[in-house]
Image (cartoon, rainbow, N blue to C red; front, side, top):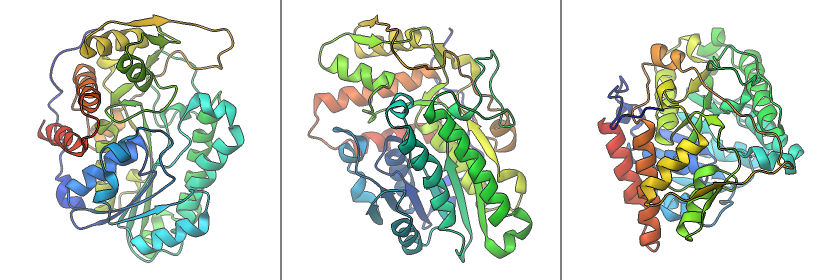
Length: 373
């Protein structure tokens, strides 16, 4: 693995701030890891941000640590499966943009609650779209699914948006099912040929494994490492040779924001489709490489492999092809893996050095640095 310092230096070819300034943005899952960062970024660009989510699952969490509630124009604490509550919240927000991130997001947890995983990830997504059927204004909608939605044959090359969907575990299968369900709703109720009548533009987004400050979810490699290292313990690694498309959380968020903004200004039906947002192939690495880099940034090398024959199935290799986003959206990653790990470790170390302080300004500083590349 070869990682160079710095970033790719490819700018998003549009002014995101002007696209979102004074616009109403509705985010489901705003209390989660991605949703909290997206809320802060949109607020910083001058948007009116409305959140809909359950309370955070974990303590600590970025929503609380970064005082995300303070930047919201409105907030509804409710389940995405509560269609009545969701529809009322969307109507009240009167959104120009909708980002649907609410989900059961963990592969291993999906083995413990498979039915709930399908309900949240599939029915929850359809509840969002169903709530927009009588919407009377223009609206760009990005439904976030997952890179796990592909029928993963553990092939050497990256999956393209046109590749078959599937899923061994309930989480992956639920995300594939959500993609199929959203495609059906888009064709049935929001067809591009009648766009002038309904005004709702829908795309799906499939991102790689995200890292960054503020994630404390269980059974994720960086949060697991942070919990161990902050307590002076060794990091336990299950699958050191597995390969994943890791990227800083701001990378896919910039993709979602770019896609939604371009949809808002265009009637091109090619935009209303699935999109991959992942790292460049030169940044792929194994879990063991990731841990070497992260522990090095933390100030120690302290991880150990602990395998078990009773663990549920997890794919060994997953790669994404991002050519479509690069060439059709002019989007590309800005931070390489080295920079992503450096920023992630720095965020957590600052939190643990003074955890009574709000991390909001630290998030804003990372967003500023990302946008300046």
